[in-house]
Length: 131
Picture 1 (cartoon, rainbow, N blue to C red):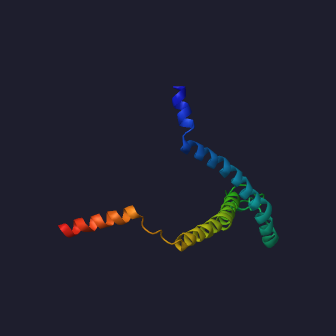
Picture 2: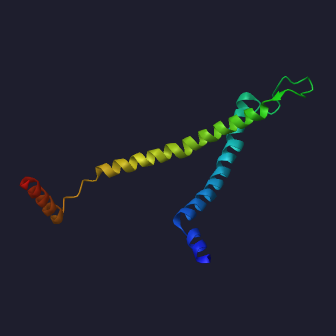
Picture 3: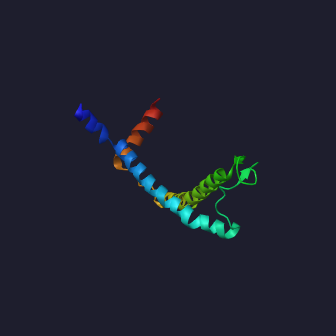
């Protein structure tokens, strides 16, 4: 029973998933810091109020009641900023690297067929002619 558990844990997919989750959590902290510490203050400089949690529809003069949409607006802006950061700092560079690798693969000339391959082609051609 323990051997089966050990085999399960040491299987490649489980280890890859664990590494991905750990790196994802660390990367999430980096992106959150980028949004919170860089982008949000920039929005605050432009619009004078980066925090919209006080916005409510139908609230009275004291700010009570009504539909509080401010937190939703904050979450929406945070999501859009995180998506923007991930796209421009991860997706765009990764796509550029993949395109460069594909270009390098196309530049490599195909290897000449080996003697065995040539003989197999001759046999195939002879069999096709013999039909």
